[in-house]
Image 1 (cartoon, rainbow, N blue to C red):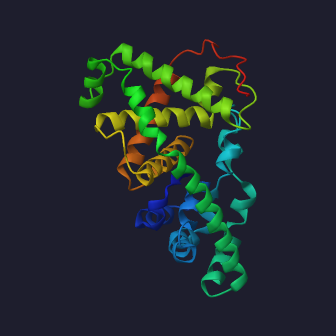
Image 2: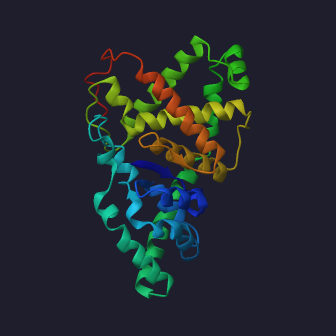
Amino acid sequence: MTKQVVDSNAMHCETLRAFLSASQNNYAVLNDYAAMEAYKGNTLKSIFPSMKIASEFPRQIIILKSTGHICSLSGRERGLQRRMIDERQTRDFPRFCRGLKAAENGDAGLRKQLLESGRVADTQMDRILASAPILPGAIKELRETFREEELKAIRLGKPFPDTLIEKAVKFIMQLAFKAMESHPTPPLRIGSVNELQNTYLFRHSVATFVWSIDWIAQGKPDIVRADRVRNDVVDIIFATYATFFDGLLSNDRLAQLIYHGTRSILSMLARVPDGGHFAGQRATK
């Protein structure tokens, strides 16, 4: 069984159809941001083509719980994927597809429901847009902590010196615990380094670091249009989810770069003996 996270651009792509038609044991994993990307804007224009391919394989679609809920899940290894899956929505996806077809054919009540979902999606995307302008400034602050030889390694794609690795680990840990402290319902207890690394918020912090390093390597400016940063933020989310499954279906260079970079860092961290340094750490406000 292969489960791949599908980002919004791949929802329309023949790559998705090829993946699902290759085997009944291939599953497309959809998170709430895939849905929001499909609903946002002109909902009744975007939702039907976005869901067309998925609707052809309704029994091969896995729907995840909301990102807010997943942020609260423990990092316990056993049952990690299962805890992320919304079993009811996954089971009911064929019925959702039938409703979508009825709405496309003019069912007024169902079209009204789709429009309401579109308003919810727009609201969430607007929240990300509002916070996007602060991110390039945060990257600037990170860049200023690097010495010239460290920046050279980043820009030339060379192996990181030990000093840069230490700064990377520190940045990721600080970002992860800050996210846990500010989240309304973080994991209540982290019993080991392994459990920490299996939490969504930690992996999202790793993915954010990879994105930040690429930003620095590309020499991107400190002032960028908010909607472009928002697109990057959504790429980080898709890449983070893909680390919990068997990969990422995406045509986006940045999303794939973040995913593979995050997987690489997580693999390296997995080889570090668990000394229990974070045993008993609470991630509450």
